[in-house]
Image (cartoon, rainbow, N blue to C red; front, top):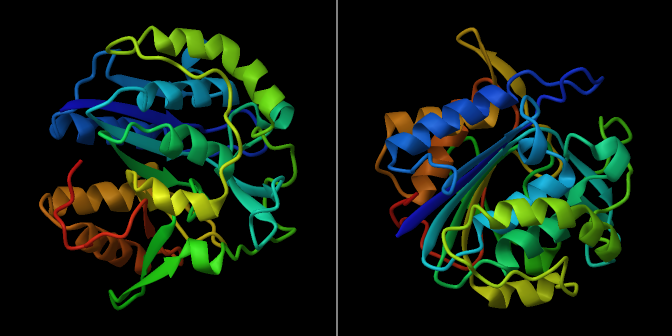
Length: 310
């Protein structure tokens, strides 16, 4: 099966929101993927950081276009890693019980807004071919439901795992006025997204392994009640619950994201483990240092004892 990867690390260099470890996270994740057999040619691995230029600079439209490239092919194992800021905005669609959507934060968010969870779900999950899989690691604040997968598993400090059904219970987010990044419009607005996507989409289409039909812009709104029936093979490990922040850490003299570090450290120590063990062991690495609780979100009800495959 063909393997593709998209790695996004944003330090927001020179801004008042600067982070220090996100580009290092991307470098470390790329090294890990190579050890797992992922190719690094430009048709298979795309890296976006704010140290790069052109289509590899992580603006909102470049990020969405790269995501469309990532999941554009059938019979493909896809890997997405994002390290940067996460936030929340008011839910523009009214389908969230909390009234807020999780977001990830492009480098140009102050001008062009954040990428909300509705948009991320449509680009990454709804458009994913049924014969393909997607594995996601999000290292950012408020990331628990960042792509709105219907089933979320959490591990407590003792390793006990509980299931939260997002369809039944809704996503009860906690919005605080103290959060670093607030407000901004949602890039799920169809006209805004079409305009921003136009230039970048043409570039990333050129990196596709084979030519596939590409839908222009954004489709119609998909409500959470419908997403359970998609049954897509999507697995996401996220740095924390929706109401938590994710740490930018210094470990062994290196600036890294705490979730990215814990995930990679766990995979190096235990290369053969189940989805459940990966969640529990990552939690154990974090619990003595940080309050954040990693989560596993999936697109369908599954046996967590299945071997983790990347």
